[in-house]
Image (cartoon, rainbow, N blue to C red; front, side, top):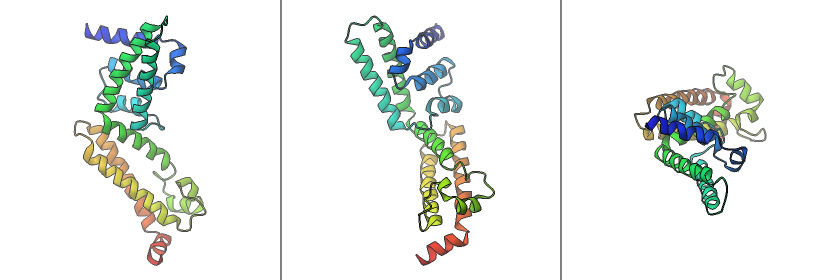
Length: 210
């Protein structure tokens, strides 16, 4: 009975008109959430990456978008609309989603951060020619060509990201073992990049004399 109820809610959501798809900013996030709920997999790493996997997403931004959409729903419900039932259903779903995001704050923040790292270090991860590529095209690694001490600047960026990774290592609950494992993999990759830069002659020069 419970599964049938959840399925009916999911089907109702999927039947929302294009108007709702365009009006509500959390549409694709909410779809992923409802699908995971139907699959009874809300706690799995795969589902959480589908829900929080937008590279432009952050925990604060996602919660703000949900609040904005809930406000739109409430405003619509105060009016006399033919699609009032759909707005009411959307509001219930958004409230449920908001609770889920709040309860999974650290997971959301970690996954969003991992997504950003994948983009930020796309030319650095698993790059056997990292040092050479960095020296030739530092802008591909987020460092301006005009920067006087490029190696030192890059090293500092890596150190800051490692600090964040270490914080997640402590804050992510042990129940989310797969997420903790992915966090550890990112840590190892960042350490490799940091060590490559640290052992260059240019980095030693930049930090020793300036």
